[in-house]
Length: 122
Image: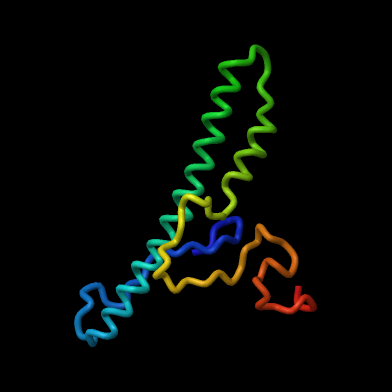
């Protein structure tokens, strides 16, 4: 699924819900892919939620400590930064996962595509 910011989100993979009628090797591969996908999604979700909660806590603290107007535009920008897809160092993807990143829009320029695209294409 693609959201309104053109982010691609994994929803489900369901070629055969019973996982029957396939070979043991296929089932092993399928389960490995599914577990790897969930591992990646969980790491990104935890990273994002940690950043969002930290922004909300900081905003609440600022509101409680300061008398007067709170700069909500500042907090809106902080919140938007917290929503960006990136992994926090404490949330690692399992080392057994075969996942390889191919795009990271937070990097910018040629680095965005980890060298998979020449600069003439960007």
